[in-house]
Image (cartoon, rainbow, N blue to C red; front, side, top):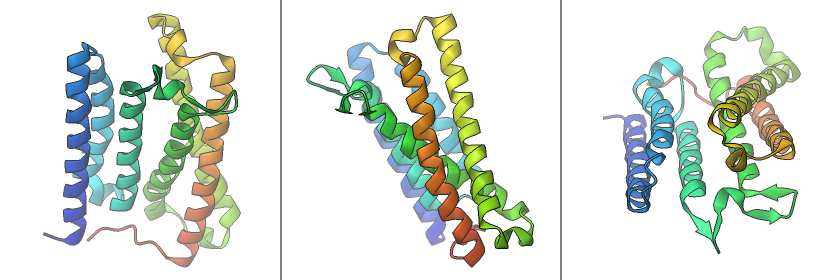
Length: 202
C-alpha cells in the first residue's frame, strides 16, 4: 500500500468517526434530519476517495474537506450557552461561526477546482498568473452562489428562513466565499507556475 493510499484510508476513518459520533448525539436528541446532512457530507468525500486518481485530488486537499465536514456537523450539533455554534458571533454583526465555515469551505473548494482544472490547462497559462487565479476565484464563487440558491429554495419551500438567515446573512456568505476564494486562486496559480505541487497521484 502506497503512502498516498494510507493517507486516504486515515482520512476515510476520520470522516467515518466524526459522523458516527455526531450521529449518536443526533439520535439521542431525536434529530434524525442530521442523517440527511451526513449523506451530503459523505457523498463528495466518498466519490473523491474512490476516484482520486482520476480527479487528481491530493490527500492534503481531502484533509481540508474533511475538516470542513467536521466543522459543519459540529456547528449544527454543538451549542455554547444555549447558542448553536452556527449562530455564535465572534464579532457582533460582523463575524460569526457561519462566516468562518464559508471562508474555509471556499478556500478548500478553490483548491479542488484547481486540481480538476490542472491536467487540462494549456502550458501557456503558466505565465499568466492573473488569468489562472481569476479563473479559480470566479469558478469558486460561482459554486458558492449555487449554494445560496439552494438555501433560497429551502426558505421558500421548507420554511427554513429562521435557520438560514436574512439578506445580510446571504450577503456576508457571498463576501466570505470571495475572501476564501482569493487566497486559493493566488496560491494555486503560483503552485501551477512553479510546479511545487504534484497533482497526479501514483
